[in-house]
Image (cartoon, rainbow, N blue to C red; front, side, top):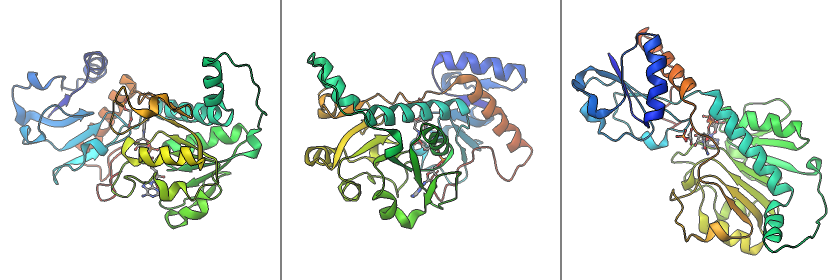
Length: 304
Ligand SMILES: NC(=O)C1=CN([C@@H]2O[C@H](COP(=O)(O)OP(=O)(O)OC[C@H]3O[C@@H](n4cnc5c(N)ncnc54)[C@H](O)[C@@H]3O)[C@@H](O)[C@H]2O)C=CC1
Ligand SMILES: O=C(O)C(=O)COP(=O)(O)O
């Protein structure tokens, strides 16, 4: 009943400490697996080895909040995401920063600064802007709470439209009504068959003219060329994106130098090693105790 952790060596060192303190066996490289049949749990981002190598594998745990890179999985395996609060707070911070940067015209000021141009624009108030968050899960709800604190009005779109304090919620079939009042559209959706390519021209056309786009979900949810067209027509006035398709974004990609776009290299969050290890231990214990549902377990029929 051993756990195999695949990932960078600095992560492995922290994990070894946490697992050793609990006398939990851990191997931190696929090359060190002498008996593949002993591996019951695999923790990884993108595994560097075929899952078929381990005939008794039962649970795969993603070191990130997203799991799209691990799907599809063989039918007999269970899949969990990390529940590290640290990742969620970091993404929340990035989203708040991006909303403020766009609302306070930072793409324009960065462009002016490169040209040494001192030119002050009218200063807008957060109270006049409605932020629409697509994906009101663990991260979306955190972001909504902080943005409300800053005075923005916030609405949310999720599969169920489950209420959230002070946020006007829209369910899956109310997308047009949600979009038409989103001055800033934030995407925090997981990547699934139904969200792939969702940020495209048809959706952009339903936003108020001059809307802003903040994207921290997954790169292939965004049709970059449709975004470029929307920026050219003014339908979108500016965008800040942390995820792209492909990643890394090629050096000569137009988005790097577009004066209305700010790109960060999938830097909203990175996994904090200790909480990640502690979460994996909780998954392992729950599995051993025969829990019907594991911490952070993914509903494989939904894909998140
Ligand atoms: N840029 C970065 O560094 C990071 C990005 N992420 C991304 O953020 C995503 C969201 O993370 P969490 O909030 O923890 O996920 P979560 O599972 O807690 O929430 C997902 C939300 O999306 C909604 N949703 C899913 N499919 C939908 C659909 N088809 N229609 C309408 N609503 C739908 C759900 O109802 C739920 O509100 C991750 O899957 C990952 O892709 C997460 C961490 C870091
Ligand atoms: O948690 C996620 O889904 C992320 O996108 C962040 O991934 P990372 O922790 O940087 O491997």
